[in-house]
Image (cartoon, rainbow, N blue to C red; front, side):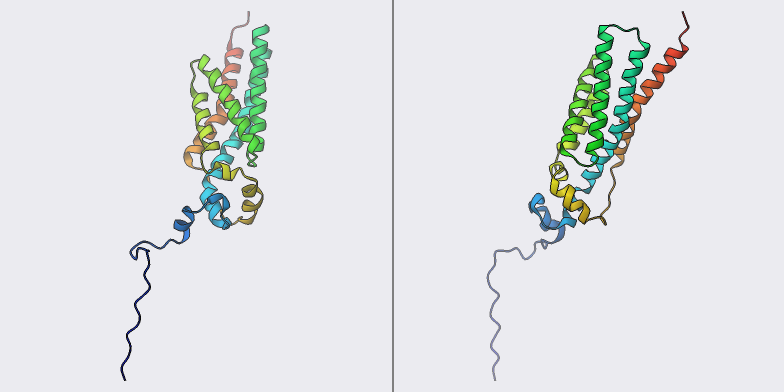
Length: 205
């Protein structure tokens, strides 16, 4: 009794030596915003999410300290029209920055627009004092808030569905972002300390 040979395998265009498209390899080629796997979406976006929330938390005390600096300048510098305008601008920027940080930490899209706007104005004003540090912070925050996958992180689906469905996925901001956030938070406080030190140590007339 003869045994018939097995039929040849069907022709295919796939490369037999290619790596299998599974897991993150397959997911990377998919549309991230429309994917159904919440775990993979969160894994792809968790670093961006934590960087944004880290900077946003830093903007809250930074804005409040900036507003306090505006009040102190108005209280201790001899008042005139120009000083009053400058103090009001500083106070308004500080309060807007604090409010923007407060709502951006919850991934509210309007919060990033407020933060970027405030830092943009602060950066332009810092050029007048030959201090481009605020302008550098502006470009860093601008890239963080709008570079991919920021649009996904700020979406209603990510905030209202994906995050609550993936509490087991944890992440943290990068060390560089932590350093930037700490610097942005303490700079206004340092300026306040230097201002009070200079004022209190000045000889009385």
